[in-house]
Amino acid sequence: MKTRKLGRTGLDVSILSFGASSLGGVFHEVDEAEAIRTVHEAVDLGMNFIDVSPYYGLTKSEAVLGKAIAGLRRDQFYLSTKAGRYGADAFDFSAKRITASIDESLRRLNTDYVDILYLHDIEFGSLRQVVEESIPAINRLKEQGKIRFTGISGLPLSIFRTVLAESEVDSILSYCRYSLNDTSLLDLVPLLASKQIGIVNASPLSMGLLSGKEPPAWHPASSRIREVCSRTAQLCRENGIDLPKLAIQFAVADERIPTTLVSTANPANIRKNAAWAQEEPDKEQLEQVREWLKPIHNETWLSGRPENNEEEQAG
Image (tube, rainbow, N blue to C red; front, top):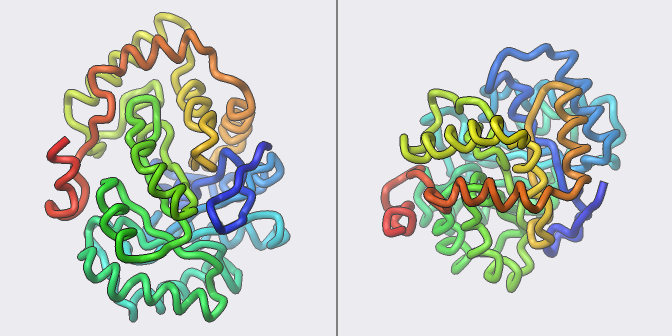
C-alpha cells in the first residue's frame, strides 16, 4: 500500500490505517478470534499504522489488540494509543494520571513502547492544563523511551490552534473533519505544514453518517446533518453509487493528509477497505455526491467544553 511521511516523525505511514476501536465492541459485539485475524489481515495488506485508546471498549480494545500484535513482529507496524479519556465522561489530563496510563497501556498492549501517544479529546479538559501540565508529561515519557512521538486529538479545530500556539507536538489526530461532508481540516493544513506536524485523519465515514445506513442513535450530529446524509445515501442507492467506497477513496486521495483511520473487526471488511483505498474515485460520482452533501458542507457539532467550541459556534 502507498505510504506518506507523517510530518517530522519520519514515519512512513500507509494511506489507510487501522483504527482498533472496533476490537472493543464499541459498535457491536465482536468475536475475539475474528478481531485478531482482522488486525493480522490489515498488517498483511500493508496497513502499517494502528491506533487505539484505553477509552475504546473501556480498555478491551487495547487488550484484544495486545493479543493480536503478540503474533506480529514489532517492526511490522507503528502503534499509537492515547491518554486522558477513560470513559464517556471520565477525563483526567493530570501528569500523574497520564504517566500511570501509559504504563497500563503498555502492559495491555504487550509492548515496551508506542510510536505515538495522543492526549485524547482535549476539548473536554482545560487547554491551559494541557499546555502547562499534560504536554510536559508526555515529553518526559518521550525522554524515557516509553513513547517515540507526542500528539493531541479532538474534534474542534480551534483546540489545535490554541495549543500549538504555545506548545510543540509531533502529530495531531483529527476525526470527522476531512470527509465528503466536511473538509474543514484543510484550513489547518498550512499551520501544521509550517510546523512539520503529522496529520492523522479519522472516521472517513463521519462516524456512520456516510456508511450508507442510518447512523447510530447516539450520533451527535444535528437532525439537519443526519437528514441530508440519509437523503444522500438514498440517492446513492438509487444511482448505483457505493457511498462508503467513495468516502474512503476521497479521504485517502489528498497528498496533504498522510493517513486515514478506518475501524472494523471483520477481516472481509478490512480487505474491502484496503482494496478501495488503492483505486481512484469515480470523478463524476464524487462531484455528484458532494453536490448532494453541499447544504451541510463543513457543518459539525459541539464537543467538549463550551469555551473550546467558540470557533465552531461562530461558524
